[in-house]
Image 1 (tube, rainbow, N blue to C red):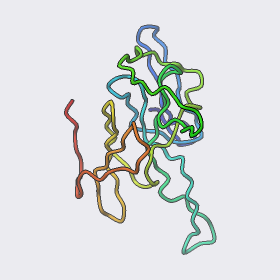
Image 2: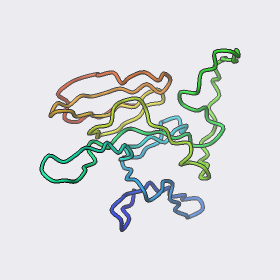
Image 3: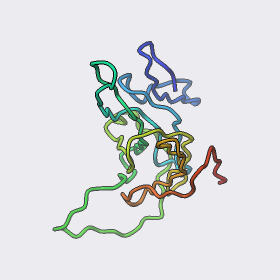
Image 4: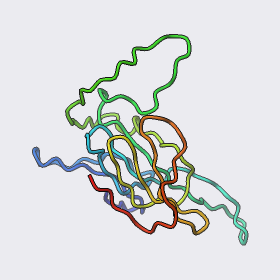
Length: 171
C-alpha cells in the first residue's frame, strides 16, 4: 500500500515482468494488509469504508467510529463471485469445477468487484488468507478474538479463539 497526500492509503500492484506499478484501489478510502488467496483467485484486504456516524459526547460534531471491515475482490471476471445471488426460480448448474483459473489480474473494474465479507465493522488486524477462508483478529470492547470468515458461505464469522494477540497461519 501507499499513502496519498489526503492521508488515505491505496493498494498498488507491481508487475515485475512489465516493470510497471498500477494503483488498484482509489484515493477515497484507506486499504491495508492486502494479500492474494494462495490459489490466486481473490484479493483480500482491510479497509475503512463503513461510515458509522455517531454524535460526539463532548462537542457538537460527528465521529466516524469503527469503520474497518474485511473486503475481497475477484482478480478477474473468470473467477466466480463470492456469495453469488441465489435464484429461487431457476435451477442452476452447481457442478463443482476443480479447474482453477490461472492467476491473471484484470485491472479494469477491480473496484466494482470489491465486496464486504460477512462481519460487523470494527477493529480488525492481522489479516491472513487460505483458499477457503480468511482469518483475522477482531477487537471489541478490549477483547480480542481470532475470527474465521468462510469464503464459500455467507455466514457470520466464527470465533476460533479468544484473547489472541497475534497469530500466523502455516500453509
